[in-house]
Image (cartoon, rainbow, N blue to C red; front, side, top):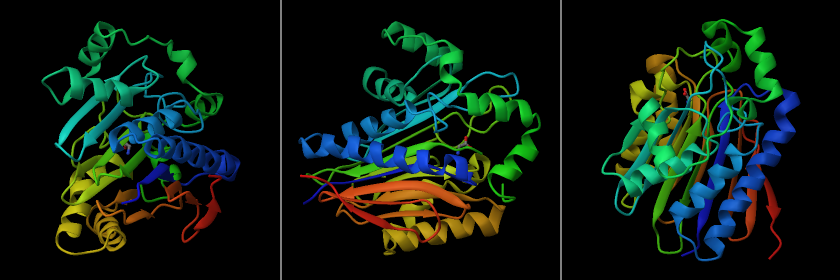
Length: 310
Ligand code: GLY
């Protein structure tokens, strides 16, 4: 079978001034992740590479470019999951780490636990030699300016999610040539969140889930809403009941809107290589690569095709 990789750069009301950089960023990340698959790498390596690319790009709210909490600190959440074994690793409220997705993978591979939080996540990072980066290097000029402007959480949330409920999250899902799926999600959370607030992203079944029997999902959007409906698992249970990846994403996001007035987005891939990128916010930058074809979009129903060079 042929491998597929899909990425998102967050579902929210992306302003025009960030539109091109967001689209360029997801295209580059999808390319990066797909190269791993093309060279025979597995789905887990591919999603980690794609998410790292977006964590290193300060147009996105993850790693560099992350949002600030009420105290002006960066607290990072991330998850990674292997659909072959259901092994999973996550970190929440991690500080001074450039690539939380790789720290999450280390939690999965080097500890007996699934999630490490706050001081524990940082102590673990230090113990395995992860380089500590100064907070200032993670904060973009855009974020500093926006944070100064919006000192109030609710106002910021309403504006950024377009009156449904901010600068949100990155993620990747992939299926490799052996039919193994994986997901990864990483975020700085929501601007002006309380110190210690943890959103959906690092929570298994909410911000992401991967199971070779049904598929892999990475979610984005208003974390408290996603947590209430356990969005990633909800999408996969619709797939298990026979819905296509696209229908399953649509009904689940619709349910989140109807039930808790939450908006967001999701990328999904099935073990057979079906994929979808769906959102109920104003915009979501996404890109997908299958068989050397790159698909991408930003606005609702936008789906642009580009042939990748062999
Ligand atoms: N979806 C990211 C968050 O709410 O933290």
